[in-house]
Image 1: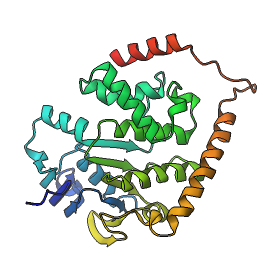
Image 2: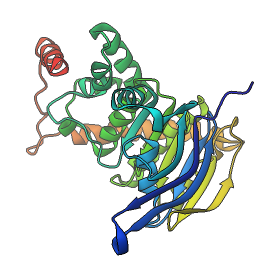
Image 3: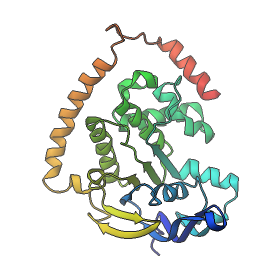
Length: 292
């Protein structure tokens, strides 16, 4: 028997308000997302894409219809089991990063594991591995204000990955980034897709959606287009065929540029390097923050 899709939605409806003020944000959405797919959901403001993302992430509930993650009917879960599902099976990346200011990159990435009751040694090892995936092994002890916008979003991606979720949900993850940082984050998503990660990306930008294997377009809460751009079990369009060699060269160029940009970002307002806490104080502060 074949495995169920990671996501299955049937007849999804979401309404707000009552009587004459009632607004229907989603109108009977049907959707299957297979394991390993990379899906971009597009639409103008008011199209229902953010409402759909909130429901897929178990942050909101539909007015009617059914929603399954890995074969589990979300509508039948109580609050405790729903919280466990969110923590273990869904990773979130938001436009605004949502990092805790006084915690290091490492401590921020560890947080979902703290909530999940994972022991200190294991959560630190997993957080370091997640930061390595996004190319930030040299920034693990830096706080958000010591990181560029692109690096902060990469920390957010690492935090989303640290629980090894079945699904990665990214809501406008490049909306606050410049062109170079946008490319950095999209390349990470490309590589995650190649590794078999299931990704659902909300965007209104055609250039961002072009990186996905499948594009779904919403208008007034209904699916009006569902276009396949690459096979589920193949690489995303950007990494197919001759593009792969170009990507390897671009990765190296971008890594060189990232180092140069970070050197500039590290300079204080008077051109001085900001002080970094010593290793003992760092570990103590992070352990205390994680414990809290």
